[in-house]
Amino acid sequence: MKKKLLLLFFVGIFISCNSQTKDFGAELPLKIKGTLNNDVSGMVYLERMNERNIGARVDSSKITGKSFAFETKIAEPGIYQINIANEQVIGLILDGGEQLTIVADGSATPDKAATAKVEGSEKMRMFNEVMSDMQNFSQNVNALDGKFQAAKSEKDKAVLRNQYLAMLEGQKILIMPKIKAMGTSLAGIIASNNFLKPDFGGEYQIELKEKLEKEGKNHFFAKMFIQTVNQALVGTVGSVAPDFELTTLEGKKVKLSDFRGKTVVIDFWATWCGPCIMAFPGMKKATEKYKDNPDVVFLFVNTFERVGEGQWKDHVSKFITNRGFTFLNPVLDIGNQTAMTYGVEGIPAKFCIDKDGKVKHKGSGYLGSTDAVFNEMVEWIEK
Image 1 (cartoon, rainbow, N blue to C red):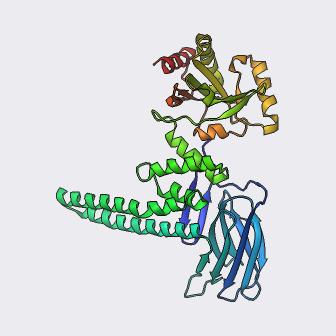
Image 2 (cartoon, rainbow, N blue to C red; image 1 turned 135 degrees about the horizontal axis):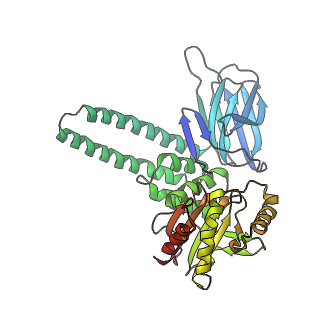
Image 3 (cartoon, rainbow, N blue to C red; image 1 turned 90 degrees about the vertical axis):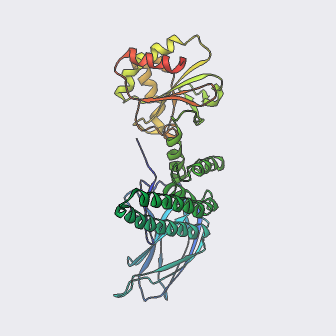
C-alpha cells in the first residue's frame, strides 16, 4: 500500500524510485537547443525516468552539425534526461514551459569525462546549488565525525558536539532561503523532500504541502509529497485531519468538514481484506450503540479495491448486499487518493476525529475479537 517519494542524486544524473509514467496527455511545452563540443553522430533522445530508473523515450532529435533541438511537449512535471547517442546522459528536472540551452561534450575522451552545462531554468540551477551545499555539508560532517571518534576526553567531545550544532544551524540558514525560493516547482518539491526533515526545516515542508494543495498541484510528485507530509502528521495528537469529499453508493456527497462539531470515526477497508471483515461485527456493535447520538458519526471508507474504477461501485454494492453489511453505508475512495492522503499503509486503518477536526486516535489491524474492537471504539469516542 505504501509509496514513497525517494530520489537519489548523482552528479548530472537524477534517478527516481517509484516514479510513474502514466499518460496524462502531452500538454506542457518544452524547448531545448543543444550544442556539442565533440564530434558525435546519431540521435539525441528526450527520456522520462520510469519506475525502474530507465529512460522512457518522449521525443528524439537528429544531431546535425554538432547541434540538436527539441520543440515538444511533456505530459507532466517529472525527472527527465537528455540521452546523447547513448554516449552522455544529462539529468533534467522539468515543470514544463522551459526553454533550455545545453552545451555538452556529447562523449567522453580517454582523459576526460563528458561534462555539460544547462541554462534556462533558474529552479534547476538553484536545486543544483543546494545539492552542492548539501554535499559540502556532508563532507564537513564526516570530517568532524572522524575527529569525534578520535577524541579522548569528554571535554573535547563536547566541543565537537557544539561545533556540529553550529554547523547544522549554519547549514539551515544557508539552504532554507534557496529551497523556499524554488517554491512549488518540482525542484522545490524534490529539494524539500530530500534535504529537509521534521527537525531540520520540517515546518517548511508543512507550509509547502499547504501551498501545493492551495494551488491544486496534482502531478505525481506533488501528490506523493503531500502524502508523505500528511503521513508524518496524521495520527499525531492535535494534527488536523485532511478534508475530503467522497460519494456513497447512492450518489450522495459526503464531506468530512461537514461534520465539524461531531466526533467522527473513519474506517478504511476493502472487500478483499480479511481483517477488515473480521472487525465489522465489532464496528457494527459500536454503530448501534451510538446510532441515536447525533454527535457521533461513522464513515466507512472503501478503498484499495482490486477492480477497475468503472467496476468499483457495482463490485462494492454486490459485496454489501451479499454479505449483509448494509450498516456500512460506505463512501467510495475510488482511486485511493483519500487513503493516500491519510498515509494509510495497511487496512483496516481507523481514525477518530474530534469535534475540532483534529485527529484524536489512530489504529490499524484487527484486534482479535468483536468485544476488543467495540471497546476500542467506545474508548476513542468517550475518552
